[in-house]
Amino acid sequence: MTDLTDRLAAGEELFDDEWRFLIEGYYDKQLLFYRADEVRRRYYETDVYIRGLIEISNYCRNDCLYCGIRRSNADVSRYRLAEEEIFACCKQGYELGFRTFVLQGGEDAYHTTERVAELVSAIKEKYPDCAVTLSLGERPRRDYEIWYQAGADRYLLRHETASRSHYEKLHPPEQSHQRRMECLRDLKQIGYQTGAGFMVGSPFQKTEELITDMRFLQEVQPHMVGIGPFIPHHDTPFAGEPAGSLERTLTMVALTRLTLPKALIPATTALGTIHPQGRELGLKAGANVVMPNLSPMAVRGQYSLYDNKACTGQEAAEGLAALKESVALAGYRVVESRGDAV
Ligand code: SAH
Image (cartoon, rainbow, N blue to C red; front, top):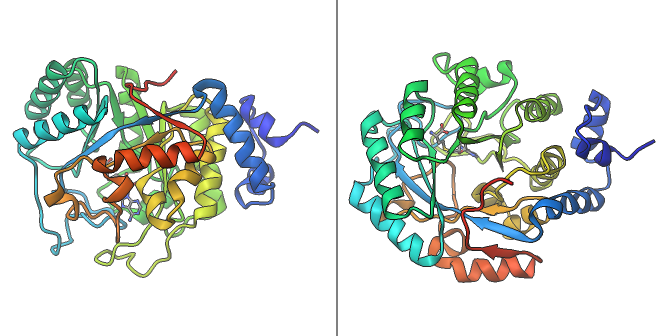
């Protein structure tokens, strides 16, 4: 019988029992990570791409049950960055060597179609050698088109969970799974390098849901996949739920690398938050991107998606030198380029 990891990397579909075996950790972990790393080196060698993450607003009209900046959390102090502040972040980032800026935020009505389009074209004009990634949630297709025409290169919109019944347990009734899927399809059709992704260990998630996530990735073939452990936030309905585990998250990163050999997969901040070596372990399990925080110091604590979210040290843009060192110690190399999908 051919090895399961070979069959995955060859694009084969697996039976439920085979997925279960892999996801639940019966396949040797070290071998799984080794195979994932082998596949990542095939296309990306030891390159690790860096993205400067600018959290432009924590106002949000949505009410995701897991998220600390959900609209019903009255205890967050809300902020939004002025255009000049965003440009200052880009300038600092550019000098540090970042060639991708990720503008992420809650779904904030202030960010009209025009405002975002102007912001994107101003950044692209100042830094024509940089990629701009947007992560501003669900919008009408028209907005995505206009922003793409303004120069946006990539869009991150995690699907959160591919199972509709599970999605409905994590979101209020007005947020629809179908709508999120439509957005992802629109983004891909428009031409964005498109990022999906999911949380590991979110409440009510069983192996079955993770199998659905993996099959969803096989079908949709996103360019980027963000995978992080769920981490509780004290002011949400899921405050008392346990966080997702390091092991399970690393396993899902490795399986995603095998399933999508060319994908851009970040070793996420959430992974770095649950374990001091989380980021390096993520890289060794198949991740090839890191996204240090470039937001102004004063607001970093306010973009509180979950408790104890790391935003200092190597998770911060200023910690880039230290980050480069630990990436090198893990056997990889931070490169100064846009880092597009191959
Ligand atoms: N409004 C944007 C950005 C959301 S924040 C959007 O809808 O895409 C970015 C990601 O943080 C989310 O997609 C979610 O997967 C993750 N996140 C939110 N709350 C979290 C939590 N409690 N634990 C772990 N990850 C969380």
